[in-house]
Amino acid sequence: DQQVKQNSPSLSVQEGRISILNCDYTNSMFDYFLWYKKYPAEGPTFLISISSIKDKNEDGRFTVFLNKSAKHLSLHIVPSQPGDSAVYFCAANALSSGSQGNLIFGKGTKLSVKP
Amino acid sequence: EPEVTQTPSHQVTQMGQEVILRCVPISNHLYFYWYRQILGQKVEFLVSFYNNEISEKSEIFDDQFSVERPDGSNFTLKIRSTKLEDSAMYFCASSENRETNEKLFFGSGTQLSVL
Image (cartoon, rainbow over all chains, first blue to last red; front, top):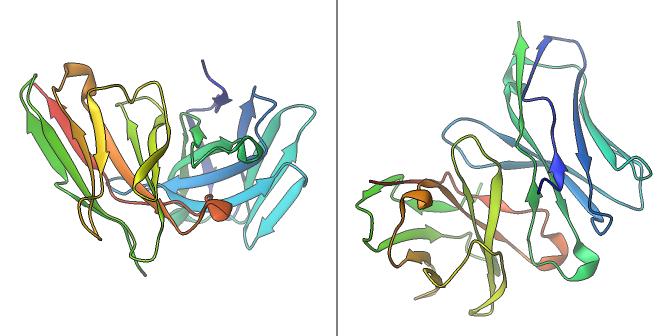
């Protein structure tokens, strides 16, 4: 039962280029989406989020796009830097249903940014 | 920057034994969570805790699991009789309030190995 899917387990990008990480979801009740970054031996770190009432949210080099009709979101990192190399998790939440921090995570995409 | 602290970083136990995983959430946070990640799988929600009681729990969080906030600083996860399939990385997280629950701050995790 994969409500949140990240179909690419890994992605390799050249430094300075754009990284695009994709995520699909199946549950129509999800109304809040988040991206977390995880380095080895550390816990996930919040990166950026988007509410279902928006289709885009930007924070510096990071932009998240949401396509509700396609149940698809993506994270764009421009320009990519070697320090961005990490595992990126997409997560979703059904805030309006009263969810208390029950984030549904995807399996993650390992991003490698090569100098 | 304040952080969530988890101890121990690695716990090895025999099947059937009880284990207690410890966490010190960020001091002014009110919501506390446990997640886990089995090797190669996604991060999964276990339980959320607010005002000294469980707010929400997943199907994984059966009668073998319990949580407690024994004092003003610690938040613990107890597994009463461990099974091999409980082997996973367990993450504690906290957030300031529900409305900003995307700001879940995760600890570095406790790697539980059940032999």
